[in-house]
Image 1 (cartoon, rainbow, N blue to C red):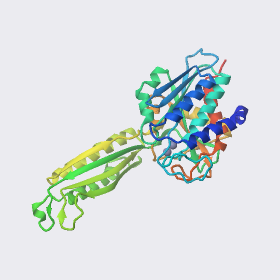
Image 2 (image 1 turned 90 degrees about the vertical axis):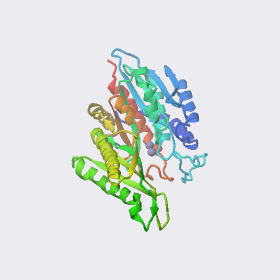
Image 3 (image 1 turned 135 degrees about the horizontal axis):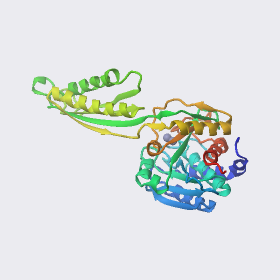
Image 4 (image 1 turned 180 degrees about the vertical axis):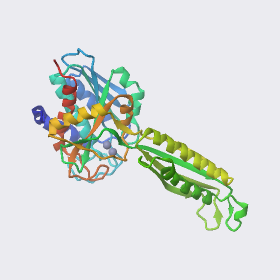
Length: 387
Ligand SMILES: [Zn+2]
Ligand SMILES: [Zn+2]
């Protein structure tokens, strides 16, 4: 099964939706126009059910196959949100909203999944149910988490979930995937170190917070070097060291440290968090200071399930002739929350030689649409074949 002919026919229409989304980017959960358009189209396609307002502005469409002998239900997920970037593409369909831009290609993801939904609603050539999921707020807002918290998986009986992201630098329409940990957990921390401020010429009357905070930064380096198994990956970076006073002759009362922790394993993540808090608090205590740690868990590690990854790679090979091995990616991906609830897989589809995602000159490559849509259709038809 190479690229499906039907998608060549639908290409102008799908491209039209994509460019319309591109022209009207919306950020985080404010994807009202996009969600409205998605729901309208899903109804037009004849989806059996279209539900809006899941995870605030998320949309779910249900498409039943011509048979349902085994009760199988697959979830296919796309993201709808844009980024707070000023677009510099010069395209005639460039963003009409200053300061918002589809710089991660979610316009393309939404359009491709709509194309697949249209095809699946038209053909129904599968035994089971396809649930198309359109989520808001992938870029830092946790829209996927909110859809899960709204009980989406249970409500629609979803058994497996699949996701896709375009990838600049990878040949257009080609696929790459990896089993296991794929995208990193991205946590943040803020630490307020408080000592006793005073005159810089009388250090003995102070508890010098700059010295204490410096010890904490240095001690953090032992989390990677001494606490974690050397074959595991972990990044602990202090990215900001801010003293309360900027004067030459004042020992500041407070220092604020900020940074990020990146991990690819649940246990490593837990250990890094525990050690970071302990080291900050105990080091401060040793000098008579205090450290208040706010540790903010972001997206979890995104883990592709073994079996579903093999299946997704097979479908990709059927579409494009082969499926490459994707590298580990230290960025985060909100689809991780859905993969924590259900087995599934996330694939990269090549965007060709374009600017990188999140760059003001980036644009989703419409040439990837036939391959992307065919992969979605293949996931449904090959996972739930009719007898
Ligand atoms: Zn992005
Ligand atoms: Zn993205």
